[in-house]
Image 1: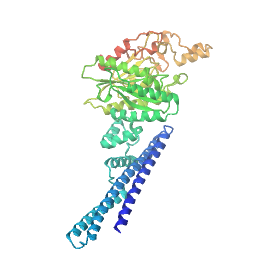
Image 2: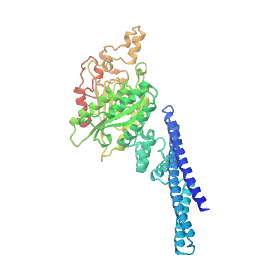
Image 3: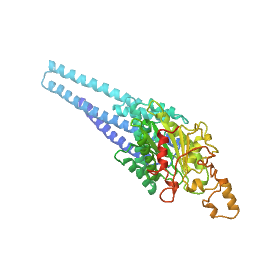
Length: 498
């Protein structure tokens, strides 16, 4: 009978080992299915569904680990029972059935049997209620996934400060699990510390590259990854604060950690900006702002410069003639700035400068005019067609903290007529020439395409110096290294003049 029990236990161990392998294979299938969905399905429902799938995968992994542990346990106890039963048989075969040797052998067999039974009963109870899995890592993962799916995510509409508090209420193991297994949850969530967002977005970026089917989109994502990998002597650390393929693509790069910086600039590029540009020319512009500001800042006053592509810029006209894209992106920009205020690791919040170039300045202006304004100390408008405001005070800044730069020959700031004048030209039969920039008369100079021109005295902004640049395209050279605008902007970012 003992032999049958030992054989059954060994067989059960082999069965558990086979089941563990099957569970691991099923977890891999679920993981593959999760990746295959890509970013085609967006929104809160997609997030919740993704969490549920991720939790199922974690449960499969945890169950597989438990089965593997049980297989080891059964095999170990089968061997111990085989040895003790063999010892009892040897005593009996020697004719010493009433001696001390038999008593010792039977006591050992009873001890092994009792220990084995207790351990197996404990494992069976754990299997039934899902508690206290054998491996600590599996236990943490299962508990974390269950908590997430049960709805411990911050409620929709939570402020960045509430998101921050929710994040720090998670255990270190839970935070690591979310970053590794559900990076899409927090990569773009304002209120998550920048270093954690960066770790999550790097995981997400690799997955997006692996699953993206569009060749040009995959190339743009790869360019972002290469920008993150680029190292230059004396260059600041580069953090990926958001990445996504929704719309025309999303990417937010920071040069220097905003959470540890005393001075932070957040630059919004304008019309025609693509995902690849964040890794290219617009990333280079943000880095130029960082370098110029860092050169002025005292040694113990670190700086950070961010390029923010959190909206769909117009690719050209007619989208660029409408404020719709800027209005759609304005709430997201405002929330991002509030998130930087919430996550600062310094004793005091950073001095924060919002920078908008071209159509991006319209977005900054629209964000500033929303109820509550934006969490910025300075607003800088470069090559701006207008903000939708008549005067600078409508942007919610203290007097003297709105700045503008317009190169003498910039067609957007100096020659683009206001819509009524363009319409009058069209009605007079001057199209298509009327669609081109025209020299404005003095009576029309104050009116831009989107409200008062920020560089006009009537707007009330403080002017930064600007020049036309080297190639006859002054609109693109405000942030060139060595330009007078960049030098003056660096002073605003680090120590604005009184």
